[in-house]
Structure formats: structure tokens, C-alpha cells
Image (tube, rainbow, N blue to C red; front, side, top):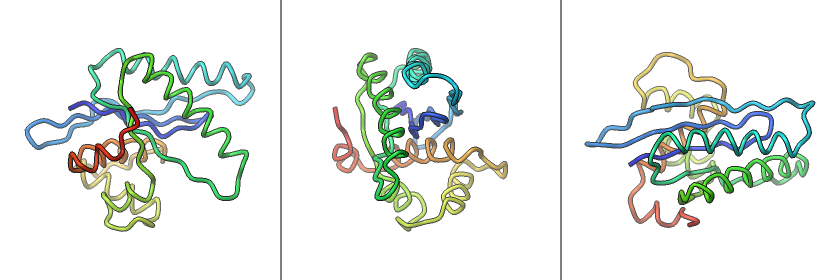
Length: 165
């Protein structure tokens, strides 16, 4: 099973491609799609869309899993993340890849055992799960790996509850 984890953002969109076979999980590719703040928003969203499509074209993906974003205070930030999320949805749909959404709390609960875990705790657990001492940066990559790892680690029943398509 190949899963693309995406942590949406306009300036930085984290992604990670993981697979599971014979009980082990492997990271094939992970990184950040960066867009320039001086570039017009439609162009930045197109860059995210095209970059994700390029990644999707390299593998036969079973699902793209994105963070279900919940914002309580910062509407500007919520709008930007929502726009990047839309670009990711379009890339998946145009590539015929099903989409699932996992909240940050669900991911942290699955991986760390605490839905309100701090960023550093998630990073430490992702490093441990991958068996590396090397620090994984930036946080967008940690979140993308965490999303994909969470999806691959969940039961089929739980995964079906996260699917949008």
C-alpha cells in the first residue's frame, strides 16, 4: 500500500510518500513544496497542484491523506491552508487518487498516545518509528510523515472512516 501524506500550506506544503509491505513501513520520499510570498496566490496554488501531480505520477498511490484542519482564531491562516488543501484535493482527483482526512489530534493519539501531544513529541515519535536519530525538519515534513504513518498503522475500519472518496 502506497500512501501520500500531505500537510497543506501555501508557503510550505509538506509531503511524504510511505509504503507498507510485509508489516514494515518505509519512507520513499519526503519534502516540502515551497512557494514565494511575492508570487500571486493563484500561481502559488498552481505550483502546489503541479508539484503534487508530479509526485503522484511517480507512484501507484492507494490514497492521499491530508490533515483535517480546524482553526478557532486565525481566519487568514485558515483561508490559506484551505486554499492549499483545495489544490491538493484537485491534484488527487485529477490523478484518480482517493483522499482521506485525519485530524492532528487523531494522528497524535495514534502515534504518540496523546491527542494533545506537543510538536516535539510527535517529531520524537516519528524519528523513533523510522528508526533514525537524525532530526526530521521542517515540521511540515514531520506532519506529512505522521499522517501517512498514522493511516498505514490504523485498522481498515478506522481508515474507511477517514476516507472522503
